Structures are given as structure tokens and as C-alpha cells.
Image (cartoon, rainbow, N blue to C red):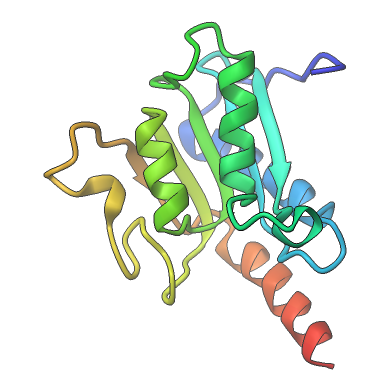
Length: 164
């Protein structure tokens, strides 16, 4: 990271989750032209922002360049415990897909907080529930629907504009 990141206050969990999703919304709005506006933030247990990213699948011509994967990669570099993000929170504007949910489980993320539900590809409770499958060795806490309407509006606007 080139600049120090702000530390979020440790208020009630619901308020902290909303603050994280608002940061993720800002990241989504900064997505490269043509990329679906999804933003992700990873916060350390003390509230320090370890990573932030937006989708770059189109910009990078990389099918794995989802906001969550990019944020996880950056966070593991910034986090003192390497790839294990056990006490960290991943906040994302859209329910993670199977790839991103699997990556979060692989990174042992402590919590996943997301905005809009994704009934077509969601893997945190909508279509699949990869992160809470009892067969998994590690299962993060999940909270969905945080500022869902605001997050869904980003996607609706993107697809309305795209379809002209």
C-alpha cells in the first residue's frame, strides 16, 4: 500500500458493517469502464483497511479478477499472518460467486459481509452456500443484505446503461 489506510471505529457490528459496505460501494463506483461495478474491502480486526478492490475482469482480460479475489490477494500481502485472514472481514457489494466464496474460505476469512443478494450465482446462501457447508473445514460468519438496495442499484444502473 502506498498510503496509510483509515482505521474504522469499533462501534456496534451493524454500524461497522455498513461503514465497510459504504467503502465497498465507493470501490464499485471506481470499477474500470465495462466491468461490472462490484467493490470489495478487507478490514483487519482493529478496523484497519488492509485492501480494497473493484472488478477488473474486463480491464485485465482475466476471469479471476473479481473484486473479492483481488482484495484477498492484496490483504494477504498486507496482513501480518500471511494468507490466513481468520479475524478479518471481507465486505463486498454483491454476494460472492462460488470462486470468490471458495477463495474466502481458502484464505480463512473470519467474516463475509455483503450487500446485494445474487440469486443466479451467489454462493453465500442464494444459489449455493459454499461458505457454510458443514463439509468445509473452515466456515466464516456471513451477513448478507447490508445496504442491499444501494448495492443493487449500482448493478441495475450498469446493466440498464449497457443494454441501452
